[in-house]
Image 1 (cartoon, helix red, strand yellow):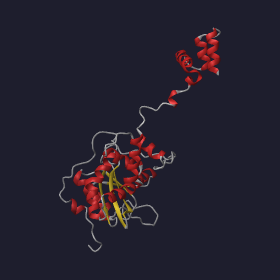
Image 2: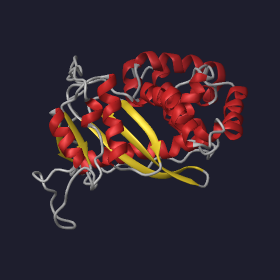
Image 3: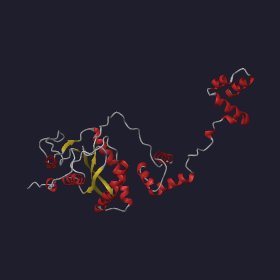
Image 4: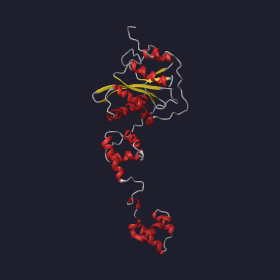
Length: 312
């Protein structure tokens, strides 16, 4: 009605073209386009054609149905990011956002809850090798079997240098993770760990750890010149918790898809395929170029990283 009124006053000469466009809140050029469409189709010609015309970028229905059927038949229960990695390997070309929105619109993927913003994230180390994290996670990785997954990861890049399953986390598994890193990359500056008893000695239950009374692991790190840092900040603890949530979600599905049920086979899969794939998709670039790793030139690494029984 406003257009017809302004258009009528313009054609009668009581309003200029600029004045009529200003009343309608549009430009003179848009007003001229509208008058052509009004002359051809009347008021119906003024409707926004974007509401009735399909976008040329819209995916064909067959492609959408193929994606949905593939997810339901092969990947049901996988989170979107995990599924998207497989989608790309299978030749998919759509963006992550398109895949996520398509699955969420069909109720196949939940919408993520809004993250809390009251915690300040700790800054990452600037170079690879400046600080490593090591921790273990107990989980039912294959049906009916609970193992501990030991992960040693770089703080600067989130690259996983070592990961393997053991029946139970302890000083032997911690030494193995450190040995894997040193033999492959060299000595690193510091290691961030939780307050587990094989890392730190705690004189009183729930009290502060001792920085002078070292465990066997602490003595070994001291001999290697590696600083031990207690993980007591929420930012660091939360970072590793998120890492293990990712593995607890992805890894059981990957092991099941490959028919793996034994620890030996699982460890070979971790080293030969899974760790490489995870690093490819989850690694981040360091803030500075270079490396803090120092090549290992000693000859007695196994003698340093060894567990000594109480009787010895």
